[in-house]
Image: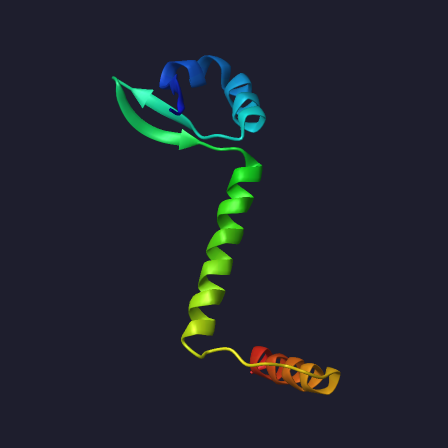
Length: 89
């Protein structure tokens, strides 16, 4: 079960709520009129969510054949040069 906090508690003591979110590493559900309004998460959890999204997107691209294998330093340098040209175009 998630921890909950009222919107009023956030108004009165947002620092403590943020500290609790960072300590617990679990989302804190913000309630207003006994209904969920949103969530507060720690920076660590936010970073994990973002990394998971990037990894999932990379996996989808790999599975769709949108990636290529680079086996040598020369291939890497050529690929980086190609990306620089595209970025400057």
